[in-house]
Image (cartoon, rainbow, N blue to C red; front, side, top):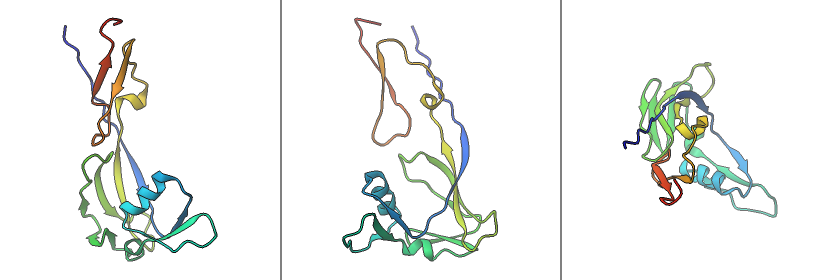
Length: 141
C-alpha cells in the first residue's frame, strides 16, 4: 500500500521590523537577536537584557542591512536552510524611514490540523521546517 503525503504550502506575508530592543531571558529571543548580529549590552541589575543591533539601525528608506550586507529596495534576500521563510525581499511598502525585510512564511500541513494516523507521531529534523515523516507503532496501526 502506498502512503501519499500531501505537502501544503501556504505563503503569508510577514513584516520583520527590527531595531533596538529589549528581551527577557527567553532563549528563542536570545537566538533571534544573535541571528541578527546584535550584541548584548552589558547587563546591570535590570531585567530585561538590552541588545544593540547596529546593522538594523544602518538600514535606510532605500536599503536594508542584514548581517552587515546591504540590500537595495527590491533585492532578494536568500533565506538560510532550515528557516521557515521563503522569498525574502527588501521593501518599503509604507514609505517609512527604514526599509524592511518582507518574507513569505512557509506553512506546514500540521499547522492546518492535518490528522495523523492512529498510533503515529510526526518526526522532525533539526534542519527542516515541517515534519519529515511519521513514526508508527507497527503492532498497533
